[in-house]
Image (cartoon, rainbow, N blue to C red):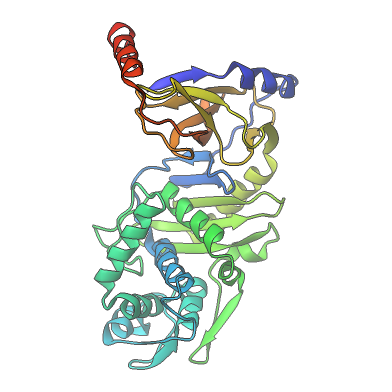
Length: 383
């Protein structure tokens, strides 16, 4: 892995942060917590964010991602009706003791109503009905969840059911749950407003949205709570109250009250405790990476769109920045290939990781170029 300091970046930001005085610390009672900047995917706070956890009903976000994907692809219509099987009724209904929409056995319910139940009521019966209606069985649907998960970049998750009910083979991470939320918000804006609906009535039973943060005036508009006795209380939330959207994930808390308070604190810190500093406009090369045996010896590295840094207010020794990539890079390289990462640190901690992409194509070099690079590798090494 090659690691390059960015003197230009440090110079630019030293001016911005010359008056910095005191570092601002933050912690949470949650054993697992992540705060993600929606626009860039940057992790602004990370506490065991890549450690395995039981996702509980927050796994339903992956269920919803598959359903929304099917709707967007026109493989499914909101008005399509799905059957409530005995499995959905018995294992996800009122008799199961879990969250439910109280769907009637052998009834048919429109997809959009099942979706509302999953989001607002966390209905297990609704989640199972969606899974069976789309894939024929919950297990087959779980395979679709895992496939889509790989496509959107999940690295620490495995799903075996649509409900999030406990299973030793079902797990996720706080970072992955934030990634699912980011995918839903970005790709399905027509359905995202459902997450902020306050209530849903089915079978003459009115249930309120389980996300208590919707009502406390900090701009939260989604997404999903979760709880099991073993895993504790967790939540995936998002807000764009200040014009900049954040996604927060917390899990492993002891009560609903603690969950609400810790989520409020994390979101409030995220909206107030960081400052936006524009650094690199769209199309500006940030650094260059060596290409072994290519038509060009280097390829430029740049972000997708503008690169803005979100840095803690009042941080000392901030920022320091490096670009890292795995060498040697070999052709062909296509413009837009992700090749590297920009890592920004404050006080020794990484506060932002932004992917960097090839700024142009690099094809195979001629025999002279390959021979020259081979000699360079032999003499100097690439690592």
